[in-house]
Image 1 (cartoon, rainbow, N blue to C red):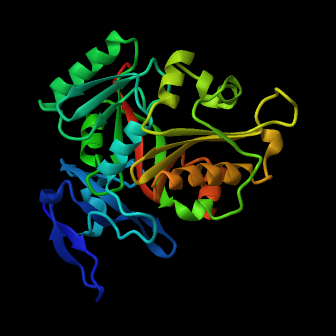
Image 2 (image 1 turned 90 degrees about the vertical axis):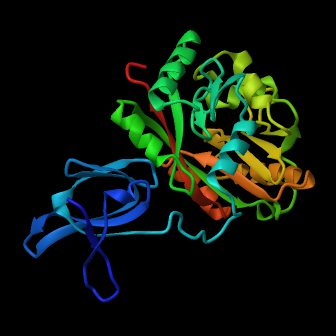
Image 3 (image 1 turned 120 degrees about the vertical axis):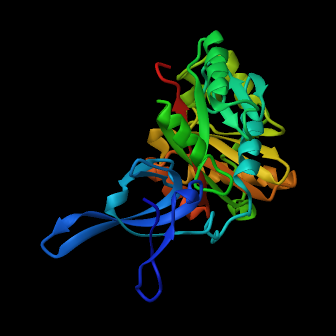
Length: 340
């Protein structure tokens, strides 16, 4: 066992990478079978997280792992740790992770070395999971045992939020958790954009801004009743350095809002969340209007960059954010403790 081949400009295949490259980003071509036209190949790009007993594991940008047999490999190479970004503000994974944590603050926190343990009665994964900013300050198994104990005392499952697809991300940690039986769930994409273009439109009088969410806003926020107490939810939603809430009132006086949104301002960053439009009011430009008015408020406070988080299956939201200039920055998902 040892090396695999590298793609070259001239078409030659050279033996270049080895198990010593675990932890690096690689591009690998492997044999996927054969058809009438000859062999079929598949390409895999991601972080090489293990290479043992004739099998490689590669964690892709979206956080999903691929296992390949060494005997099936035909080409591969080490590639830059993070591809050049085509647009959007420059930022590292850690900066965005810390900013997002401040903007969606947990009710209770504790430190375990460089890990931040967060609990909020079960209201959202972000406020009820470990954020591994650095090493845990002890060996991994001891840290995981303490994590399970800490969340168990609060009646919560032990979850670790792991970032993938960017410089300084957690692919190796994700692989170690997978080997220990921590299962993956709830994948998301963090996207960024310049803030000013979001507000580059005429003010929309339909949108009302406030500093606290009222009962109508909370009722329109679908996640608000999914888990956790109303008190915990309000503490998370209203927490953060400088929070704004947007509401488009419904047509009926006192009825449910037509649209809502939330933005938290933290230095140069404006974080958008909870952008919801009533099913009967879609295709009226309300989501864009909500984000524009929130962006205008954030610009007035000195912010210049925007971020948000979206599920990769939410194609309608992804299309909207594409039109508004957002680009993928990195992904993250949760790892749940066995039997958690």
